[in-house]
Amino acid sequence: MIGFALDMDGTVYHGDRPIPGAKEFIQELSRRGIPFRFITNNSSHTREFYAARLARLGFGTDVSQILTSTTATIRFIKENRPGKTVFPIATPDVLKEIEDSGVPICKEGRPDIVLLTFDITIDYAKINAGYHYIMEGSEFIATHPDDVCPTETGYDVDIGPFIRLYESLTRKDPIVVGKPNRLMLDMAALEMGVPADKVIMVGDRLSTDIRMAVDAGVTSVLVLSGETDRALLETSGIEPTFVLDSVADIVGKVIDP
Image (cartoon, rainbow, N blue to C red; front, side, top):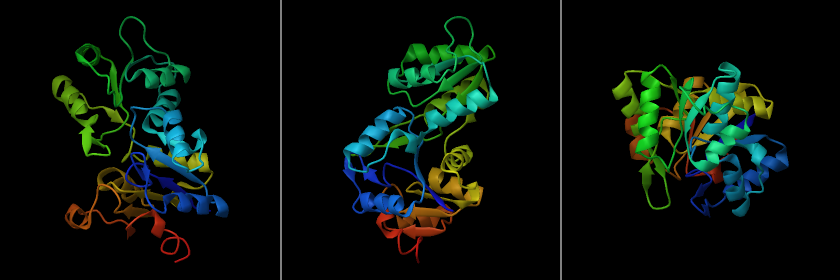
């Protein structure tokens, strides 16, 4: 059995506008009993936020079908750093998600881990505290590496520049959990109950979505409905398995060719 790992923004919607044919594609996967997970590097919001957006746009999905880089990082910490305390640099909603997961939040003293997410409420106090903790020996973990985040009108600064800030100041490399790290692909496969090598990754970003699939040796579908155009693809050196205009073309070209 195959399963689909689907990026969201630029792949099935642009902001609050579904990409034509995307809803019908998801409905066809459900009709055929093909499992899927929406996976996103954006760690500025919770799974519930994305589930509500998809429901509002008519995709008919629920929170169990969403995997964010925050969710993946929480699982990584619980499985590989059990009991370790964290200092999250995160929005209030994501901070609550981390707390509710059972990962212990450091209330005083030095945390075991500085956890950097895409914090759109970040300020000097958080940046400075994280710097001092890392210098004092805290491990540095980041949810994902993206430099910019797509919006309806362009791009906003994402987490990548802050990762490099800490790297340059502390001379310490972080563990980065999100795409293109294959951890998210493996987690999606486990949730769907399919072998990791049977996951088909669909996305619009070469540097994260397609890079992850290529590095993991799984089928990749680059859709040209978001960040990447053919000119960028030709100069990238990355070779997706399929290049399609949008997810609306998957049935007939990837499924039932």
